[in-house]
Image (cartoon, rainbow, N blue to C red; front, top):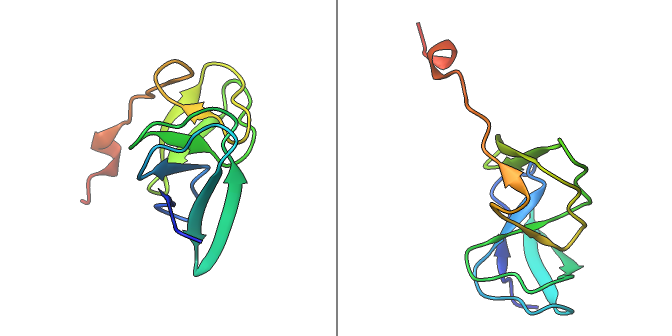
Length: 99
Protein backbone atom coordinates (compact mmCIF):
# COMPACT_ATOMS: atom_id res chain seq x y z
CA UNK A 1 0.00 0.00 0.00
CA UNK A 2 1.38 3.40 -0.98
CA UNK A 3 1.46 6.07 1.73
CA UNK A 4 -0.47 9.17 0.60
CA UNK A 5 -0.67 11.08 3.89
CA UNK A 6 1.69 12.07 6.69
CA UNK A 7 1.15 11.83 10.42
CA UNK A 8 3.56 14.38 11.87
CA UNK A 9 3.34 13.23 15.52
CA UNK A 10 1.56 10.34 17.22
CA UNK A 11 -0.46 12.87 19.32
CA UNK A 12 -2.00 14.34 16.14
CA UNK A 13 -5.67 13.89 15.28
CA UNK A 14 -5.19 14.90 11.62
CA UNK A 15 -2.99 13.73 8.76
CA UNK A 16 -1.78 15.81 5.82
CA UNK A 17 -2.45 14.29 2.40
CA UNK A 18 0.58 14.43 0.09
CA UNK A 19 -1.64 13.87 -2.93
CA UNK A 20 -5.33 14.42 -3.59
CA UNK A 21 -7.43 11.59 -2.19
CA UNK A 22 -10.85 11.20 -3.80
CA UNK A 23 -13.94 10.56 -1.70
CA UNK A 24 -14.33 6.84 -1.05
CA UNK A 25 -10.61 6.10 -1.50
CA UNK A 26 -8.19 5.12 1.25
CA UNK A 27 -6.00 7.58 3.12
CA UNK A 28 -2.82 5.64 3.97
CA UNK A 29 -0.31 6.80 6.59
CA UNK A 30 2.47 5.46 8.79
CA UNK A 31 1.97 5.56 12.56
CA UNK A 32 5.11 4.45 14.38
CA UNK A 33 6.06 1.94 11.70
CA UNK A 34 2.53 0.57 11.31
CA UNK A 35 0.62 1.32 8.09
CA UNK A 36 -2.87 2.63 8.91
CA UNK A 37 -5.81 3.50 6.67
CA UNK A 38 -9.10 5.33 6.76
CA UNK A 39 -11.64 6.10 4.09
CA UNK A 40 -11.86 9.66 2.76
CA UNK A 41 -15.49 10.69 3.28
CA UNK A 42 -14.98 13.61 0.90
CA UNK A 43 -12.19 14.59 -1.48
CA UNK A 44 -9.11 15.74 0.43
CA UNK A 45 -7.01 18.10 -1.74
CA UNK A 46 -3.22 17.90 -1.96
CA UNK A 47 -1.52 19.30 1.19
CA UNK A 48 -4.78 19.47 3.15
CA UNK A 49 -5.69 17.75 6.41
CA UNK A 50 -8.08 14.90 7.10
CA UNK A 51 -9.57 14.04 10.51
CA UNK A 52 -8.37 10.72 11.97
CA UNK A 53 -11.39 10.53 14.30
CA UNK A 54 -14.60 12.49 14.73
CA UNK A 55 -13.73 15.93 16.12
CA UNK A 56 -16.56 17.56 18.07
CA UNK A 57 -17.22 21.31 17.97
CA UNK A 58 -14.69 23.13 20.18
CA UNK A 59 -12.22 20.23 20.15
CA UNK A 60 -8.47 20.84 19.78
CA UNK A 61 -6.94 20.14 16.38
CA UNK A 62 -3.47 18.65 16.85
CA UNK A 63 -0.69 18.65 14.24
CA UNK A 64 3.08 18.36 14.87
CA UNK A 65 2.11 17.33 18.42
CA UNK A 66 0.85 20.90 19.00
CA UNK A 67 -2.56 22.50 19.00
CA UNK A 68 -3.05 24.34 15.69
CA UNK A 69 -6.67 25.33 16.29
CA UNK A 70 -10.12 24.32 17.45
CA UNK A 71 -13.08 23.03 15.51
CA UNK A 72 -15.97 25.38 14.75
CA UNK A 73 -18.32 22.43 14.21
CA UNK A 74 -18.20 18.65 14.25
CA UNK A 75 -15.83 17.17 11.65
CA UNK A 76 -16.41 13.52 10.83
CA UNK A 77 -13.61 10.96 10.59
CA UNK A 78 -12.11 11.01 7.09
CA UNK A 79 -13.37 14.52 6.30
CA UNK A 80 -11.47 17.62 5.27
CA UNK A 81 -10.13 19.82 8.07
CA UNK A 82 -9.63 23.40 6.82
CA UNK A 83 -10.47 27.06 7.40
CA UNK A 84 -14.19 26.31 6.97
CA UNK A 85 -14.37 24.16 10.09
CA UNK A 86 -11.43 25.19 12.33
CA UNK A 87 -10.02 28.44 13.63
CA UNK A 88 -6.58 29.34 14.95
CA UNK A 89 -6.08 29.71 18.67
CA UNK A 90 -3.50 32.33 19.67
CA UNK A 91 -0.54 31.04 21.67
CA UNK A 92 1.12 32.77 24.57
CA UNK A 93 4.66 32.61 23.15
CA UNK A 94 6.16 34.66 25.99
CA UNK A 95 5.28 31.94 28.50
CA UNK A 96 7.13 29.42 26.30
CA UNK A 97 10.47 31.27 26.35
CA UNK A 98 13.32 29.39 27.97
CA UNK A 99 14.55 31.48 30.87
